[in-house]
Length: 245
Ligand code: GLP
Image (cartoon, rainbow, N blue to C red; front, side):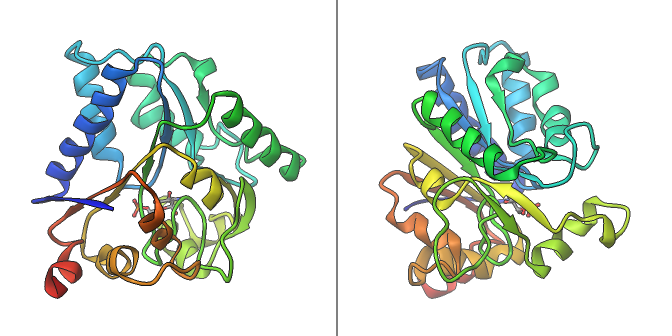
């Protein structure tokens, strides 16, 4: 894994935006894998800025989001559909029919997972997958487990993730208990991976992801096996690996 350090969150976001923008400039029809959470918000702001400056055109780009809460309709303000609309889609020119996010309101979740995997296949896979990192080392919603889940699947969220995500909801009871997420095989099949981490609460997970054993107990550790993975980490999140180095 290539490790790029950044001074702080803003610099991490800018460096990430240059990597994403360069992919789109070099391959205007590229397929991007997108993440949600607080971490990529700065990256999305920077991409909007580059778009407004006329430096990047997203009209040929296709996107696939990592995950969505089960039981939330796309219109729900807490859904990842709404998040993407607010932070990226409504500000840039990716055609609506090129944007894909699992449908959390699907009646048949299993069928929705299969449909999503097929869509990714039809698009010939993901060129660049952006990832954030859960405090427990999860990527997408692949929670610590005894095995790596392969394709897009229905996942039960851990208590730690429910608590971490409660900040986005009015109260804890409203946080969905399960989600649809790309699996580890889906993520590892992306041709390039860009993992972002910022803040002291990610330092422990970063240490495990970068220097620990590859184990489904810390899902991000599997990225050590990816041939083209880049981590951009700010000073606070890299504290543990810098101490050991
Ligand atoms: C959620 C998302 C992940 C994200 C994680 C970390 O669980 N499903 O994709 O990486 O939160 O979020 P944050 O960036 O807010 O710390």
